[in-house]
Amino acid sequence: MRLEIGNVFIKDVVFGDETKFADGVVTVKKQDIIDLVMEDDHIKSVDMDVAHPGEKTRITPVKDVVEPRVKVEGPGGVFPGVLSNVEQVGSGKTNVAKGMAVMTTGKIVGFQEGIIDMCGPGADYTPFSKTINLVIKVEPIDGLKQHEHEKAVRFAGFKTAALVAETIKDVTPDEIKVYEVETLFEGVRKYPDLPKIGYVQMIQTQGLLHDTYVYGVDGKQIIPTLLYPTECMDGAIVSGNCVSACDKNTTYHQMNNPVVHDLLERHGKDYNFVGIIVTNENVYLADKERSSNMTAKLAEFLELDGVIISQEGFGNPDTDLIMNCKKIEKKGIHTVIVTDEYAGRDGASQSLADADPLANAVVTGGNANEVIVLPAMDKIIGTLDFVDTIAGGFDGSLSEDGSITVELQAITGATNEVGFNKMSARTL
Image 1 (tube, one colour):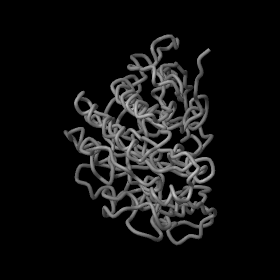
Image 2 (cartoon, rainbow, N blue to C red):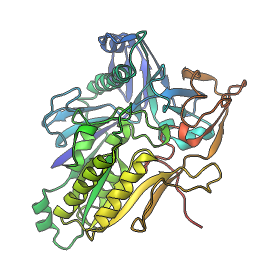
Image 3 (tube, one colour):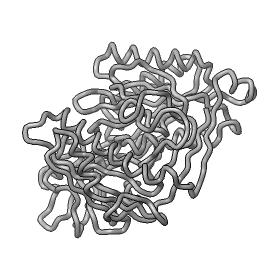
């Protein structure tokens, strides 16, 4: 499987009379997006704005973040099973609008939505303070059910990203990166002396607005399956969940998963990166047992020597994480788990809801309960109405002067569990 990613570096995003790309600048005609998004009868109104790095701008409540990508050559299209057909993706050529993102905001869907500051101390905790953000504010029709509201906003983000990406489809990229992996037996023959490494990616699928989609299928409905690493770069996995903002894997995270990218960077040099085992996070014990059994079986079937396991969310999913870890370890396969911690504001509480002696190699994205004061901003995109009620906030979080006192879990991507952040921790 060979995929060429063509990065087109975006210098700015502006509004104009035509949606186009020229000289590094994406120009968006507002009416083009309004007409596209308003095709959904569940949406009452659409507005948009642009946020630049360094501006005194706050975006909240943030629902999803999407990187515009477009298929230039090869089978399928970006967001298979969602916007395009369900043909397998991950090969051919894909162009990327690098340096920008599409964000969705508006009336809150669930309480676990986030804050992004484009400057100040909060900006240090989110990667999206460094991107030029086209923010789409979507307001639902009155009385819309939460699941329908979430879907309407999710598709608004995907459609907008796809529309923007079309402007760079025929552009010669500024940078081309080639990602290539072999089939299982080809890889073994090609790299007979290298350890076989796999990546177990746990996706948030607990329901009640905690959903992730694989080729358009709700992850609750799948059993663990295998993906080529490059499939995720074409949007085979997309976010549809309202898990706490700090460790939510937005669609942007899914398309730019650093575990995948780092493993591919060393594939064929230090080890043979066999592929991704995608597994879900379940509510009921029987489902947890089933999925973790299947995940461990696949790791054994592939004769892996080592596995990296990442989770999404906290609390209940900690049990899935530890089940996956200990069952794979008992197969004689070494594991490293990637998580974050909810250790209390003083850092003294138990970090995870579950544990096992076999989970002896851990990478952490930091403590989500740490408190931060976010200073007032000159501009708000979205609304401050829900700051006191989102996860990480509390009654009185929003001060009269516009500053906000919250736990880090309220900041989108702050303790991200695929390592797309700057935080970590170590035991003293």
